[in-house]
Image (cartoon, rainbow, N blue to C red):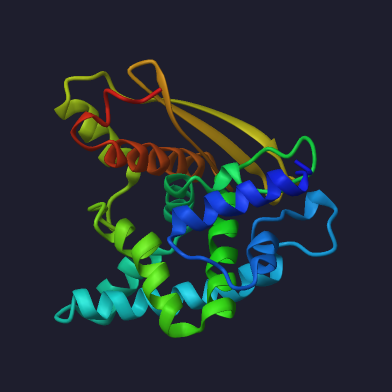
Length: 235
């Protein structure tokens, strides 16, 4: 979209409210939310590059604090899960950031793009506030919420979603996968998962399995975000 000044201000207000931080330099946030398809002078890619490192550092700090008795191997697995594209896409949807993304016409918003935007927003917060305040904002808005979702880094989201459906007396999740593009050596697949005939999540990946896992992870995020009635409130 190419928002008007008023629309852009409203989108920035919504993003700031969702992450719990008011930017001193709002241009940083606008840049973090701008996809290159918008044709603007700048986009989120460099902020994403920075935000990836900021998230990595803060995730390591948080995991060392929460799991002081674990070894390096287990902490590394937890870290990979915590800052994976699947997890960050779930975090982005929880924050409602997809509603604030500035893009050109026809862009299909994938989980990968949303994860990139989350990283860019983290980079923008760091540049605007410094590491101390960024630590508090990013932990509260993203990392702690992902950690508290109870996801097991050693478990496939597809298995967890199926177990959740089984426990609720629902039929198994149904996946629909299609190839959406990419060259032969780097294909891109898009998956949609339905629970009880309701669309529950979407995801993309380099293989059908990755796409299904991404869709299942998004569905889990929506269900967990809905509390005890999460499965009933889908759709």
